[in-house]
Figure 1 (tube, rainbow, N blue to C red):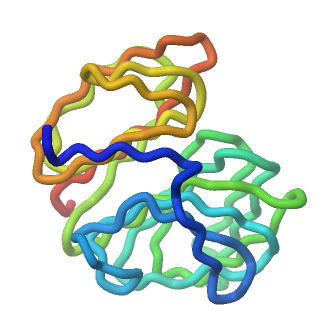
Figure 2: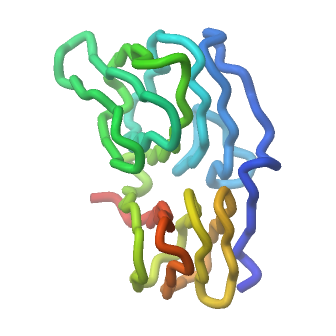
Length: 191
């Protein structure tokens, strides 16, 4: 599996947001060398430090999952998005072209973000707390939020993960602790 890459949350480089309201730690942006305007898919962890608008991403589907903190209330200008993201590890999806205001429900929070360009791919995001078998996909990512996991011979501790590309892989995942939680992202053809 030469196209499988390991990462640790502590090693991800923080990039400040344009509006100064937070930081993003990018895990992967595909294809290699792509930026925020030309990725097919992108996964990151954000630290939201103040209330404010999310950047709009036309043609992109987004999935946001609260990792830590009180969360945010999400409200779009056009009323199509209205959601309290206050339950950790419950993914919420919305269209990236929506102009969405994020109002903090506490001092700050951290969230896990998946963005896919609709014309290139789609994403399935699920949170696992026990053993699972994931179907074969050429691209995807696993992130151990809590506990200790075994994934096809790889050991993942909390805040560690794997992402893969061009490597059709099925995954057998086994939780090694009672409090284990893992986010699985499978990148699929467009819907």
